[in-house]
Picture (cartoon, rainbow, N blue to C red):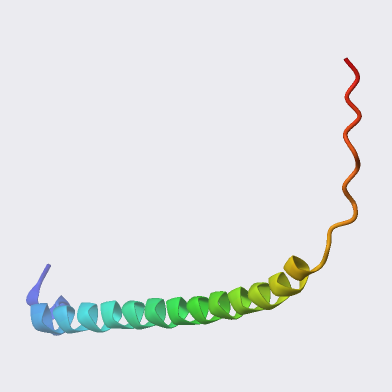
Length: 68
């Protein structure tokens, strides 16, 4: 490739790649943070709903009729 087509050369290419990688990393961190916050919120919801069901008595059990 002729020198005129390099458009900045290796230095500018490294700079562009570094910026691209930084953008990708920041997006991944943001998505991971949002996912963790959502999981924490759902775990709290499950904990609060689980406490009410644990304290209730289960009356749907049927007796076992075993005939030998």
